[in-house]
Length: 315
Image 1: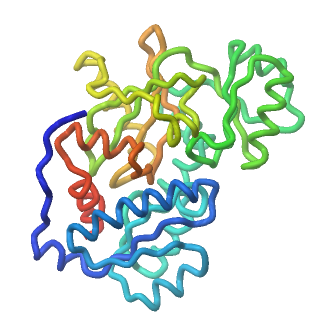
Image 2 (image 1 turned 135 degrees about the vertical axis):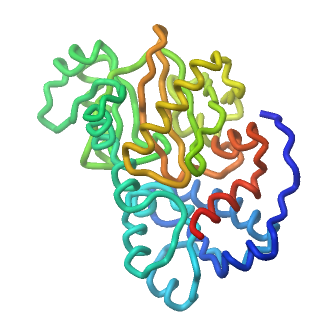
C-alpha cells in the first residue's frame, strides 16, 4: 500500500468547470461521527486544490441550504440512513443538482442488505444464505438451517452498527433485539469461515483488493474506526487470477444494484475458495482508517486526486 503518488494539482479549467460545490456531511444517522471525520478530510483536500466549496453539516432543512447557496454540484459525504439510502439523492434530483456517487435506486438498494441479497440471488451472484427475522421467528430452526452460527444485521445500517453473532437460539434472540434498536428490518446470515476482503470501485474500475484482518470476532465498528491493531493487507496475497475474479464479482455486484461512480464491495472468501458478497457501500468512509483511499494509494492515486475524480464524475 505504499505505491508512490505525486502531488495532484487540477487545472484551472477543471476547477472552473466544477463551479461552486456543496460538501454535505454530518447528518443525524448513527454514523454521524464518522461522516464528520470523512467530511473534514474531503474538505481539507478541496481546500488544497483550490476548489470553491462550502462545507455543510446537514442538521436542518436541505433545500434552504441549496437554494441560498446557488451551488453547481454536491459532494455527498453522508453515511447511513438519510445519506446513503436514496433520500437525499432524490431531493437533489428534484432540484436538478448533480451529485457524487450512486443515484436514487442504486443508493436505496445498496443500503438495504435484504434487497441487495435478494437481487444478487436473482441474477446468480453468490451471497451467504439468510433469513429475515421477526419477533416470532423460530430461533432454533434458523440456527440449524444456517449451519450452527450466524451473524445478525440491521438491514439498513452501515459501519457494522447493531451487528452481532449467535450460535444458540437464546443468543440469536438477543442479537435480534440488539439489531432491532437500529432497524425494523433484520436478517440472520450464515457465518462464513474464511477471510474478508474489500474491493473499491472508482468510475467503472475495480482498484486493488485489500484483505482485512482483525483480532475481533469480525470486522466490527471498533475494528473499523478505533482499533490500531486492525491489519489492511495490500497486495492482498491472492493470486492474480483470484484477485481478478474478486474484482469482476465486485463490479458485477455494484452494477447489478444500479450503483455508479464510486463505492466499495465487501466480500468473504471461505476456506474452500468460494466467494460470497456481503454488501455494497455507496458512500464509503474517507477517514484515516478508510479503505477506498488505501486502495487508491495502492493504485498510485493520492487522496486529493481521489477526491477530485469522485467530484469530477458529476461534470
